[in-house]
Structure formats: structure tokens, C-alpha cells
Image 1 (cartoon, rainbow, N blue to C red):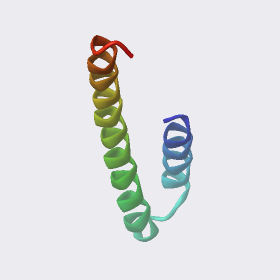
Image 2: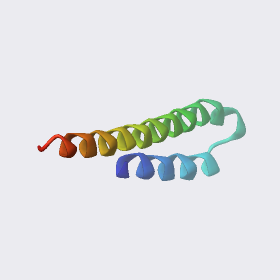
Image 3: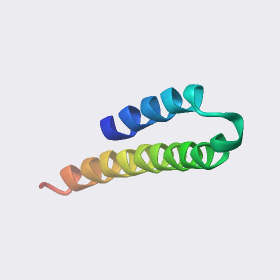
Image 4: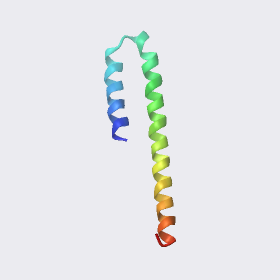
Length: 59
């Protein structure tokens, strides 16, 4: 997750410096980073839920 946050900060920095016509591709990358962030949150919730289930079965 830390890598995603660092990359997002770098993308934001670059977006401010780039000319308007060069921003489209970078904006697409920013959207993909948000997808990864969402997937990471979902995966974390799944891990926590299954850890509790696993513990309930005596492990």
C-alpha cells in the first residue's frame, strides 16, 4: 500500500508539470492506481475475516 501511495504522489507531481496534451495517459495510470488501492482494501478485509474464522477453528 505504501508503494501505491508513493506512486500516486509522484503521478500528482508529474501532472502539475506536464502540458495538457501529455496528461491523458498519466491520468489513466492514476485511475489504475485507485483500482489497486481498492483491491488492496478488499483483500485486507478478506484476510482479516478469514483469520478470525481460522482462529475459531482452533488454529
